Image: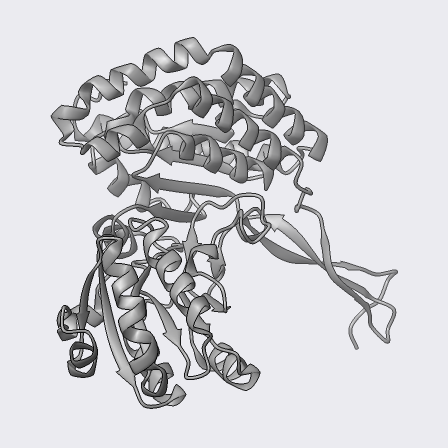
Length: 424
C-alpha cells in the first residue's frame, strides 16, 4: 500500500487494527478442527507455491546490500527449497498441538452449589513486531491463530517481500478453513511511524510482542499503551560450583557460549567458585579461546589465565552476542548468586554442580525466567521445552515468563454455573 501522508498512514493503521479486532471476535467461534485445517492448508500452499515464494525472497536478497546486511544475515534471510519445506513442517507441528482455548484450568464447587471454573481464553489481538528471518512470520502467525488470536505482523524491511508472500498464503488458508482472513495481517508499509500509531490503539490491540534488538524493544515498551511481552537482553550466566565435574563444566560452558553466540540464551558471563578456579578456570578459558572467545575477567581470573583482559563494570552487564565472555571468581555460592542477581537480565542461568543442596539453593534464589542445573543455557527455548514453538522469551513476571508458546498467548476467565443462587 502506498501511504501519501501522515493522515493516510494513521487511517491505514486504524483500519488494520479494526479489522483485526473483528477477526479476533470471530475467532472465538473457531473450532480446533478449523484451526488445524488452516495450519495444514498453509503448509500445503507454502509447498505448492515455493517457486513464487522463492522469487519474492530473491527480491529481498537482491536488496540486502542496500540495507547493509552482513553475509551471515543474508544467509538467514535466504529461503531455499529446504527452508520452505522446514517452515511447512513447523506449521504441521503447531497444528498437532492441543488446542489451549476452552481448557478448564481448575474447577470447584462452592458450599452453595455454584460451580466455579477457570477457563482458558484467547488474548484477542496481538501486535507482533520483529526483525528476523522470514520463517518467523509463519511461526508467529501459527501460534497466534492456533491460540484463537488475531495477529498484526510488522516485520523488518529487509524481508518485506518474503513476509508479504507468506502472510498472503496464510490469510488465504484461513479463509479456506472458514476462519477470518483478517486474523493474519501484515503491516503493508515499512514506515516506522506505523508502529507508533498502532502502539497507541489499546482499544483494538490487546498486547504487543517485540522481538529484535534492545533498541526496538525499549522503544516499544516506552510508547505502547497496551501490555508488552518482552525481554530486553540476554546476559546469561554459567556458575561453576566448587563440586563441579571438570569435564562437564568445560562442556556445558563451551556449549552455552559457543553453540550459537548471537542468540539471547547464549552465555555471556562465567562465574567460578574459588575452590574450583585453580583447577578448572584455566581449562575452561583455554577451551573458550580455542573457539575464538575473548576472556575478560577480574584480577583472580587474570592471575589464573594471563591471556584474559581486565573486566569492567560494563562487561559484567553486557550482552555481547559475539565472541567475548566476562569471568568472575567468587568465594561462595552466596556470592555467586548475589553477583548473578545483580548483573543478570533475568533470562537464563545455569549451575554446574554435583551437590544437590547447592543446586536447590541456586534454583530457589536466582531470579531468572529459566534456571538450569547441569544443562546448557541454550535449552531455554520453546521447542526444547516441549512447547512446540515459541513467539519469544519473556523476562517479565506478568503475564508470561520464559518461552512463550500457545498457552502464554492466552489468558483466562471465570465461568460460574448456578441454579438460581442469590447472594444473601
